[in-house]
Length: 487
Image 1 (cartoon, helix red, strand yellow):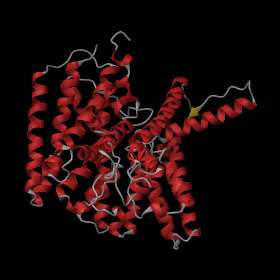
Image 2: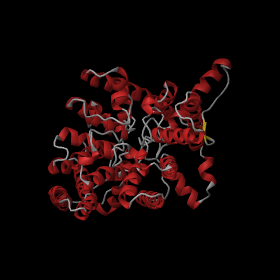
Image 3: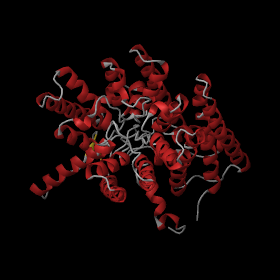
Image 4: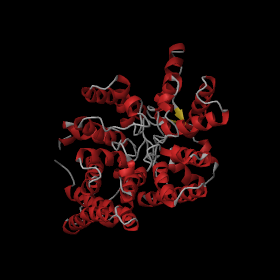
């Protein structure tokens, strides 16, 4: 097999060091709260990870030649799996999640920014573990690999292939001349968002710990809270609106923010994907708010509007926070939310799902097919932001969408062996594939995935990773053509 093994091993070594480094912050939280068992659990993972990762980088010499497509795909897939395998260990060692299958599920849900959980009672989980659980959202949101790309030149490894294979969305636009500079720019914007939201939530009455945890889930569009009733725990309209705004901002294309800073703020609204994204959020939110009032579910108009915008933003950005048990909402509202399962955020955002960019192209493709049926001799090019979309890109978008739907039904079929009802099974598959978090029925916003078998948890864990990596990156490894050195 024609793989750059040295480069792959060195990147994995770097990711082990970065993952261990990320555990330093929750370990300090453990020190602050006097949680000695948690501190020991983190140290039991941090020390070996630093030692092994550092040894791999020191022993393996700088590889010659550039990374190839195969190298990029396998590095991305292996690194996300390794991060989850390592990240699950503190939960098991500390004992708060004794089952490794459960811990792996929870960690995959964290790094993939899904937000589905197997923990029935968060009050028994130490503060430092709750912090680590939510911090995985922040780390996985922008993608730890994007951060790694900023460091890869120091290892003698180019990072464009890795970044393009990891970044969620059909395209990955370079914002600066060097991809490492791009990674640093995006992480700077990402960090500014984080700091600003923490300050605003503290202004709204949250403690530093609560504000940090909710912010990690918001900016990373993950949805892990340190309270069982999620954002409803705070009973704060101000905090709900702040979180809504930051969820919407984090579900947009982060490259737009860089262009808004370096060029013009009008660049954001000039992007057709962003406009469709805002139109969908507005339309769905108002329709849900109207139905809530008309059915008497919510009597106050302002409350229904706030609930509509919050829950729509939470689902379309695949964050998964909740301010109420939307599983008790009217069927129309739940169908609207379920439709958002398959849309997701924008390309190059922290959100999951099919992505608004693909939906935009598919809508234009439908319009073109209708036009050509009426006018067979007409020439109709699909354009996005004034640029013609290449036929290969259109083919990739349609094939991805079909694969997404196939995966949804295959995963639903596999986990149906647990014998749950149809709504539970379908929403569990949809929410994990789209990296959303809560579903309906037995996996609704006030319940969890604890009742699923270990078999289903492993299936759903890899489904979350596959959804985060845009399916093809992970499924590529199961192709014989991928492993054939002569193709």
